[in-house]
Length: 215
Image 1 (cartoon, rainbow, N blue to C red):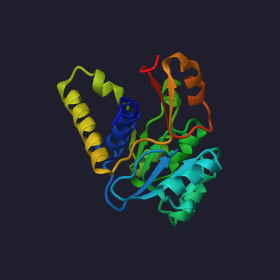
Image 2 (image 1 turned 45 degrees about the horizontal axis):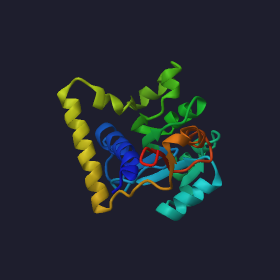
Image 3 (image 1 turned 180 degrees about the vertical axis):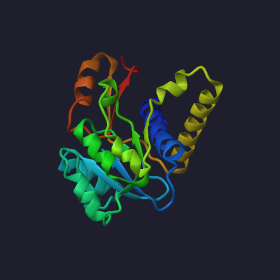
Image 4 (image 1 turned 90 degrees about the vertical axis):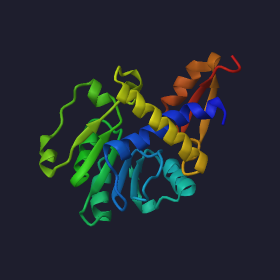
């Protein structure tokens, strides 16, 4: 595996297991909602996802075989009634969210009783946004984390967990359970401005990497 492939793999393949296994404690047969979705499958759950456009929906269907009836728009609130309809009102056991503002609130409402909400976005946290406390009455915890803090922590237990996540992600890639992030757009270091512009595009899929190998 090249260093270019390893960079995006290290981050993505640690975020998903840490969120779903160590924080949400995802169980076999549970219903999972990835918002928006470009991460990996685990424990064979029933998966729902939201995407920003039709090309991303087609990508999830063609690449991962995700049921097209389980892929909704992340551009408006329509995913919430759609999820309730598809689950016969049972909602979602685990929500992995990066939507912002009002759509974050709607994602939170998609949690079932005793579900788990895992926030991997940063904007609402940085903006000190408010949260409707009513969902906590449904026994739903709101979990947020910044995985880099595990690496930067002074606690040995956090460093041990970081190394464990790294080992697990590499092993899952070796066995083929996880696959290298795709599509992967690679930019030279001298073209880093274009890389940031690409990363900010709403139509972007997959990962972007900056290579220092060719200057």
